[in-house]
Amino acid sequence: MRNLILVGPMGAGKSTIGRLLAKELKLQFKDSDKEIEQRTGADIPWIFDVEGEQGFREREQSMIAELCELSGAVIATGGGVVLRPENRQALSSGGRVVYLHASVEQQLDRTSRDRNRPLLRNSDPAKVLGSLMEIRDPLYREIADVIVETDERPPRMVVQEIIDRL
Ligand code: S3P
Image (tube, rainbow, N blue to C red):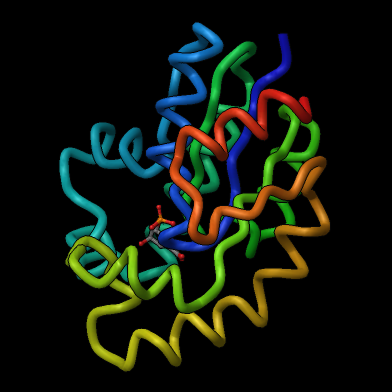
């Protein structure tokens, strides 16, 4: 069976929905950021501090290449995964890509209590999330097989819509 790959911005619910979806479909679940943290033995903010965003993107690219070799896994990705063309290529051929869309307002709401996102640490998060979306939304759409709205919807409802549309 092909992998199911979740892409979308920070706060779209990729990890929560991915875990539920995998449970529902009895598939294994892999979270790219968690795998990177396990492999590195350090958390994402530490990697950004010590190796910079570029260092993190290198690690992310090799992790994505590795995860896309799996079969029958639900894979949650980090919000910036679509920036590199190599990743977009790997994700497109690695499985069915589901874009979990969320408005900037919802992204803000869902990320506001979480300190684990280095890109939101030092500047106005609303501005950062808005400008990231301008760049990334077309890239998520470019590789999406299915686009699912997550605004104001509980994770279970999103999971059911994904299953219905696969
Ligand atoms: C990032 C999103 C994060 C994580 C890193 C960079 C981004 O993942 O990969 O902090 O560039 O949007 P989530 O989308 O799971 O928060």
